[in-house]
Length: 312
Image 1 (cartoon, rainbow, N blue to C red):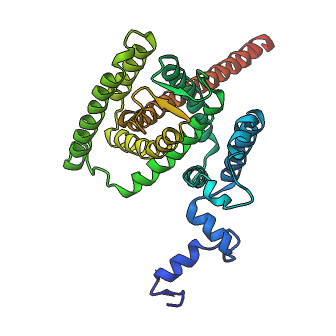
Image 2 (cartoon, one colour):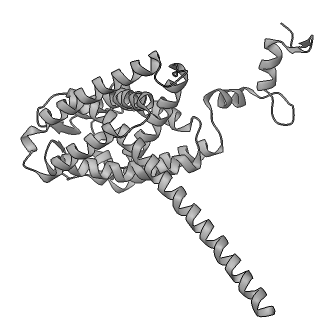
Image 3 (spheres, rainbow, N blue to C red):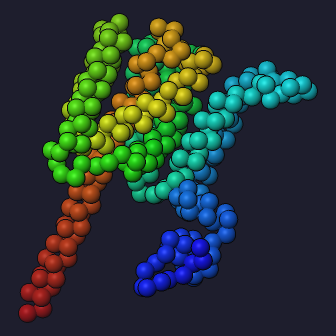
């Protein structure tokens, strides 16, 4: 169908061509159309560059570990059989996800929360020896940057899920009750699983803190639907991360499972915690900035009033 406008209404082809136009009215090229469909922008390139730079720094600082891995590859033979294609796939998928709909302000918040949260989680797990790394570090610093990258990837998956799954038209409706019931059933079940899995370390304060914080984050979300989607997205990505890490013996759980169900679902719990912590940071930061702005305005008003009084 030729793009046109008939009877004052846009035809499907006309609407499509309008979406595929640049600001100056020219048609997008093939690469521009791909970027448009994937939601890429200037911030996307910045995030990808930061991601690649982080990987380069990790390889540079911990080069002996990379060198050890590369030593197993037979470069004169069937070298592609030695490539970790699961790791390559995870890398490519996460690269595409973090570039989709990137926003510097919200993503910076998520990166900071992911770094701090990842450090706390890794410290808890390795100090209590729920899991251990083959380098025996507690925790290894090279694993910490993976947490904000995973947090950004999960954020993109949640956005996609938010579009695919219907919202409740009104609070308290049937769909709203379904999401609420599923949220409580899944999250409470996970909490009991967490308590059972971490039972051997209940003599450690770290584990009690983890259980208390997890309980608070489960009860806290007001939007049960978004909380459920976040948990499921985190668990989905967590499966592939845990499958790679445990089968390659990069890290090992005390149960020796590859991977244990708890570890997979724990990524969903971490995603919910990061989401709630990010909201808290944003609310507090907005309150702080608003207080500073109001204080500045009041100070200026007081100074102007004093200047008028001195002038009189």
